[in-house]
Length: 314
Length: 239
Image (cartoon, rainbow over all chains, first blue to last red; front, side):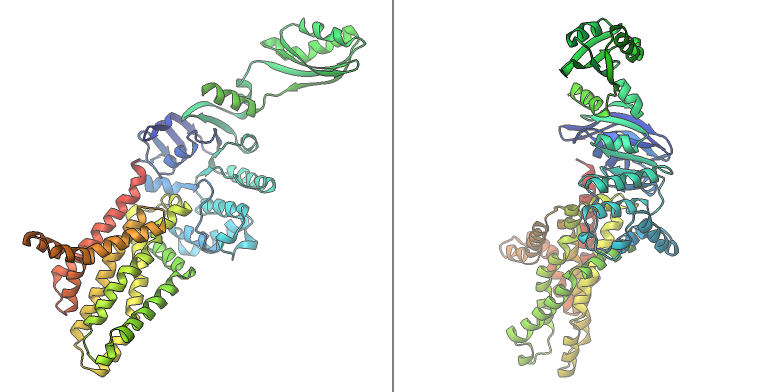
C-alpha cells in the first residue's frame, strides 16, 4: 500500500530524513516511533504530498507522490500534528466542507458526515464551533475529517498529544477499530501507544530508520539476555548469592535488597541457557532448602529498547 | 477546477461567520457617505459629477482591501490549517483562485451597495450613464488588482498585521508613489511609471472612456500577483 524508497529531505544544513525506505502492507497499523525532531513529521508530510522529498520516492496505493500528487491525496486521510482545524466552523459544517472538497457526491455528503459524527462520538457537539471545543473533541473532529472520504490509507501525526488519559484511551480504541479495515501510519513518541495500537513498529532517530519489526520482535531484538527476578528465603541469606552465580549461563546478578532471611535478586543469563533459567533457579532453591516466594521474567519493555537504540545512535 | 467552489464557499462563510464582512460593509459605507456629505460638500455644491465619488472609493479601497485580504493565507498558516488544505486533493492555483474570488465578492458587494448615491444623483442632476458604468467597472477592476496584491502579501507571512502593512505599502507606492516620482523623472521613466501606476488607468476608465488597454492592465496585475501567490504557496516545497 505504501512504498518508500531512499527518501531524503534536508532543510538547509539539517538533514531531516536520510535514506529512509520502508513498506506498509495493506491493512497494517504501523507505528512510527522516534524522539521529537527525529523526522517522523517530515516523512509523513512527504507521504501526504505536503512537501516533496529531495531525492527518493514515495508511493501510495501505486501512485507516486511527486507526479500523481492529487491521486495520492485522494487515497489518504491525514491528521497533521496538533489537529489543525478551521476554528470558526461548526463541527457538521466543517465535516461537510471536507466532504465537499474531497469530492464526495452531494447526496452522500450529509450521510457520511452523520456517520463520522457517530463513529467519533461527536453527537453532543455537532452544532458547536470547533474553536470552542476541548482538545479531546478537536482531536476527534480531526480524526472524523481524515475518515470522511473512506480513504484506504490513514496518516496520523501524534494523534494523542495533549489529551488526558481517558481521552487517550478513547482515541486509541478508535484508531484500533479503524485499523481493522485500513492501512494506518501513526507517529508518536509515546511507547505505550505503539504497544496498544500497532501491529508493526519502526523506530526513527536523527532522520534514519534504526529498527523495524513487530513489537515482540523489537523487544527481543534489544538484548539476548534473559532477566529473572527471584525472591528467595533462606536460613542464611548470604549463602544465596554465590550459589546463584554458579548456575549455568548466568552472567550477572544484582541484589535488589533483602530483609531478614529473605533476598531479592535479579539474575541475568545469556544465550540459550536463558530459556531454562527459571528451572535452574527453582532446582537450586529446592536443593538448598530455600523458599521461593516470587519468580518472574522481566520483560524488556519497548521503552528500554527505544532508549538503548536512540541513545546508542546519538 | 471543481474544488474552487468549496474553497470559495468556505472563505465566504468564514467572512460572514466572523464579524469581518459586516464590519467591512458597514464601515466602508459609513465612511464613504460621511466623507462625501460632510467633507467634500458633495450635494451642497450640487455637482452631478461623480469623479469625486469614485476618486474617494479608489482611495478608500487602498485601506479597506488589505484589511480584507490580510487573513486569506496568514490565518491558514497561523492555525496550521495550511497543511490540511494543501493535502486535500486541491491544486495550489485552485485554492488561490477560490480565496481570491471570495474576498472579491465581498468587496464587490461593498462597492455595489454604494449604488443608491449615483441613483439619487440621477434624480438631482443629469449625470451621464457612461461615467457611472465606467466608474463602477473601474472600481471593481481596481479592487481586484489591490486584492491580488493583498492576497499575495498575505501568502508571504503568517502575521496578519505584517500582511496588512505590506499590502498597504505596495498599494500606496503603486498609487501615489509612482505619480510622485514621475515629477522628477526623465520622460522615458515617467511614461513607464505612468503605465504602471494603479490609479492612472482607473482615471482613464472613470472618464467613461473604456479602453481595452486599461482593462488589460488590470487583468495583467491580477494575473501576475495571483501567479506570485501560487509560487509563494509552493515555496514551502523549496526549502
